[in-house]
Image (cartoon, rainbow, N blue to C red):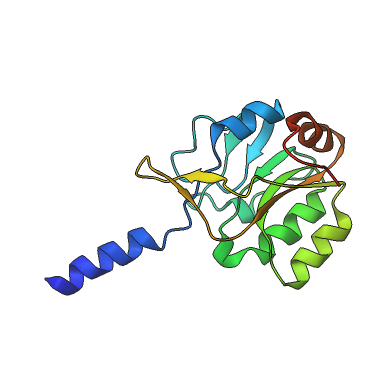
Length: 157
């Protein structure tokens, strides 16, 4: 019995589900074509016309030419970054990383902006929680770049 309880608790505390807060989308003032890494039920405050989740595998779907929002699972971000760069149109929220993908995206992004250091994400249980890593917004394409400038949260590179 204790083992089953441990598995449930462990699964809930190690989830990749950290949802970007509504106020950030309000500041961007942009409607996305697709949220490519949403939970199965979607997130009601993300201004996206549709979403892909684990159920329909957003990573294997065609995004070509679509304006995408991407807050991917940080546990396996590299394939998401590769597809985001190929798509060349959207905004991705990502953690700082000493990795090849981070350096490549840093060079290719049209605009980059740090999020507030105290950014709190929404959790599936309705609580808010900060993470221990700095996050950045990476923009590819003109609409995405303009959206980062509109936020006026920080300097945009």
